[in-house]
Amino acid sequence: MFSRLKQGYRYLFKKFDKSSEYEIRNILTVAEFEIFSQMSEYDKLHSFLIYKRCKKDEVLRNDINYLKLALLHDCGKGNIGLLKRIKKVLVGDKELERHAEKAFEKLKDINIDLAKLCRDHHEKIVENKMKIFQKIDDK
Image (cartoon, rainbow, N blue to C red):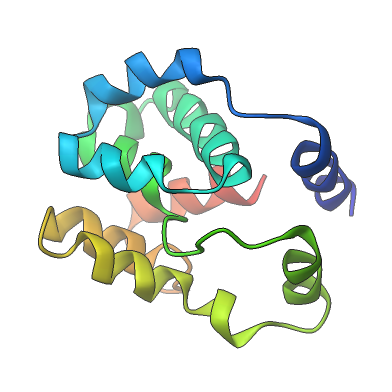
């Protein structure tokens, strides 16, 4: 419950710090960065926070595709508002629940390995690295 309140607070009052783009450009390709740039301000902020946590993890920090996953895992959400996000948490939302598949579609011709990671980042049966990523993303 507390984490959901924190998410709401971030959505309403925090903004993505554009000074972080230099570091992001060093991780993502030009095409990947273009997709990141199209994400909502909240999703950029959330993704950069996940990226920073992944960089601290002993396993994930050495895997470039997991660092990219941190930055792009929610790129399929589009620019959705707070009310739709709340609806998804409370009763579900079919469109938002497809965000992982939409991320796959956006990335499949750019980086197929990254696209598969994005598609699978909410799956229940996954390999160990993805389990680590999911724990970070769920915090």
